[in-house]
Amino acid sequence: LFLRHVALDEPWRWDLLAGARGVQLAELGLKSSAEGRRLDVPELSL
Image (cartoon, rainbow, N blue to C red; front, side):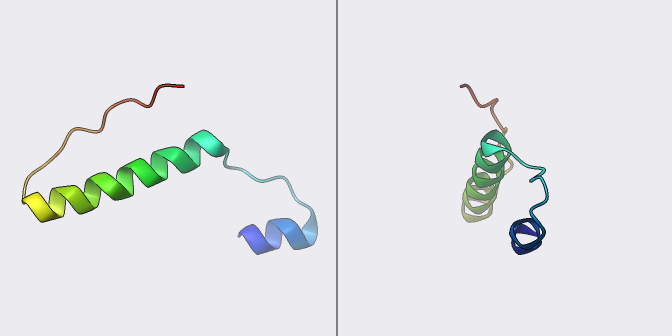
């Protein structure tokens, strides 16, 4: 999708905060799996 956005000069639908949420969720998923328990997802603060 990103390459299409660049090639066609289309607007990008996700911002930096959405990317940060994705990274946070991925890190919590790995931690949850390693610890074998569910984790709360805290709000991101700016």
